[in-house]
Length: 103
Image 1 (tube, rainbow, N blue to C red):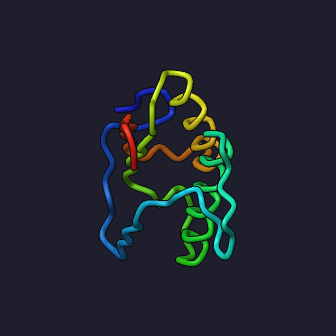
Image 2: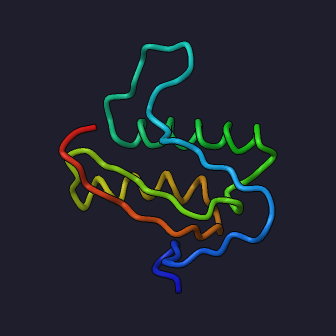
């Protein structure tokens, strides 16, 4: 079942499983965090890309994602989803976006 570019159901085939913790908008060895949501989303997805590469995996291997957006608005969700689509390409993991007051 697909909704837009994301799936509501994912199946993990038998084999190796990896569980990655949340990725944040912080670069290793840097104190600088982008102030805008687009910059934060791009930095978080870049960190996820590095983690996947370390595992010799790709976005196609992601089964499920939860995306938390602080002070969420429809516009903020769309900006974050744009960065996610750049990472995911045609991969369609089960994805839930959640608005939160703070992290």
